[in-house]
Length: 87
Image 1 (cartoon, rainbow, N blue to C red):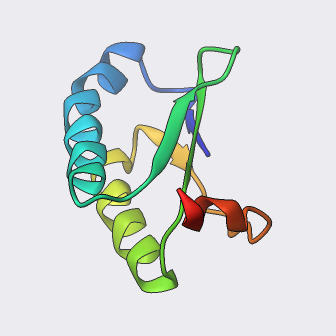
Image 2 (image 1 turned 135 degrees about the vertical axis):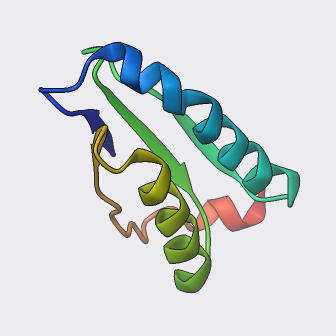
């Protein structure tokens, strides 16, 4: 989950968008699964992906470096979608 910080202009978010897209493209180019997109408030987004704990933390660390100061973000572990491994 990510949300644009209140004191940040939308233009600042647009500046980091390219780096976020590149990170997601890198993830998916390795054959990894991810669903992502904005929520209806136009300030919040969510991504759902399957990964080992190590890979998830590595992805999150890269995301944090890109988004720090612009987006508030949190990673939650959700173990209730085992069907993703079948895709």
